[in-house]
Image (tube, rainbow, N blue to C red; front, side, top):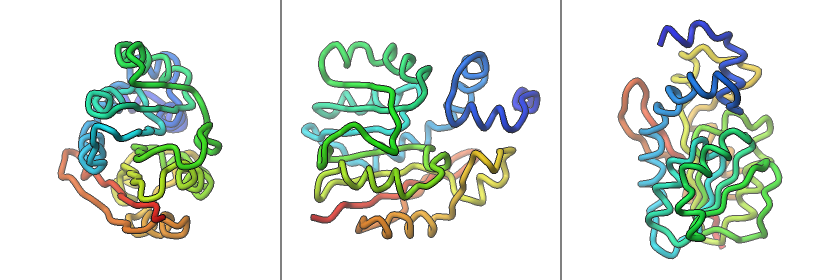
Length: 211
């Protein structure tokens, strides 16, 4: 991990938020590999079924999208990084060609979908970058169907504080704070799922939009 010490904290944090350029090409894949446990937990927590219509927000290189498309009828993905959109489209070309997936660049503070569009929505390692998370969570609440499920994959505050991150870019939370955020938006049946891993535990907040 000595390679990370050569990159200034602010630049590395900015790349984690919105990957691009040479740092994305050579360093970010190492960080994305660390998302594997979170993606496994998120996928399990979604409890996907064949006829689900699913949205992933902030899909990065598109690996979780790829896995979900082998299970469900249709998957949508939105990410505000042009670089990640291009990479995910290459990885998922087969699913896109077969009309099982649609990927687009966009901002999750104003999701380009009609109300009650999705059975399930997931987002992994993105909550940190939402300056006012209430805005994004309200949009997620709007586009998920009544009785639909959302999953937020994250590392908790204690873990994030041990990393060399720019506090002006990363907003970090305890599990209790995330439960409170979701409850304030109107989500119900909120619980936190955990998965052991190295070097960190993985957490997923699971919530339902009651009808």
